[in-house]
Image (cartoon, rainbow over the protein chains, first blue to last red):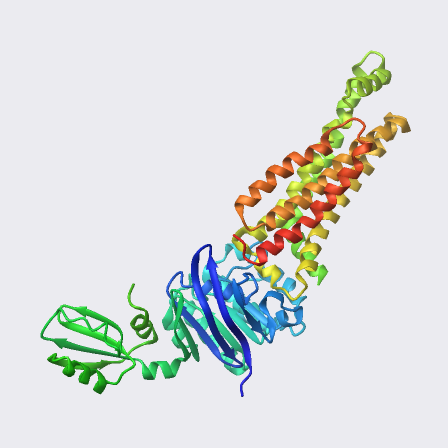
Length: 296
Length: 221
């Protein structure tokens, strides 16, 4: 049985009286890359803060390598790489100074991995972090993680502020690094198409609840989108048990469901609805996310 | 690891340490330049100056009164503001060290910097003062300097405590209380009976960061 590196049990959190989530449970297995998806304000950063020990949940707990995230030992912290939202680093340091500073804290520090990436990105050792673009800062943060060589990476909104080229570079580097070294990764991002290239497992959250948790590929196999036209434009299929989400433009319907095409067609026939142009639609992870959570 | 933390603190504070050094040395030299012209110009020379110090209560070193407080604000501000902005302190707290040991290593750096500056200032002051005044006058000066320097250290500890506080409302509240509390270090005159109180406030200030850092850690708003 695969070892759980992260294990969150019965997490409940409120900000004031506002419930963020109740009894949230999830785990991340060794060597897996899990993506946390959710709309703004559904609790993604709250979860990251709890995992990093910067927030005490109202109840429940998260364990990393069997230790409570509220009291991680220095040995466990050494195995943990953390990327703060926006690739924040010490802006008063330059490339050389920041490497010198961090190298003192990690036994297996690999300075070549860091300087190789800086060289490839044409970032000079004397360049200050404060004078860098967001994309360059992301490469510095990535270089520091590669040099630290952690067993577990927690990446908070890693694509924030990056253009498509930098995003792709970051994702490709990260996937290669994680898979080659059997690293465990827990990450969030606003840009779901980046996640698709990276993750094995997915946790999709909505306000106050979990919509889906499990293997991303299984989810993409089981979750479907069908489009069809009806001869009426006033049919509401949202209440049907097989409907997860539905959208309609005039008499053109989009239905998101875990049911098969046959089951959906049988449901339409049972309701006496005449349909035409019934088609399955190939979805990206972003389409599936929208299908599961709704457009707004 | 402590040396690497000191390295980070040095990168943040080096220009402010230099500015503090220039400010302190400049203030002491200015005090003696003023004193020299008073002695030269006054009828009765040094006797006049002695009376002026003791009876009018305006010694030449009075100009130094606020310097330890200003230096504490400069060093404390330069150390903790870059950590608080964008919550970069999370990067520091994530390092593989006990969090309290880490925070107090940062505090130790600031404390040692202020201590070093004060030692330099005192050596400079008393070396020059020896040229003008007898030992009795030096004892008066030591009694004046001691509360100011203790006040400087207390200010520094309070800056660290306030910086770690996660809520702006509480930060403002602490700042008001601290501003009033620091008055005890600036009373002047014979304050020997207040030293115990000053040291108690200093110790409380030095421990205050444990409380606010814990509030930051559990995500208090």
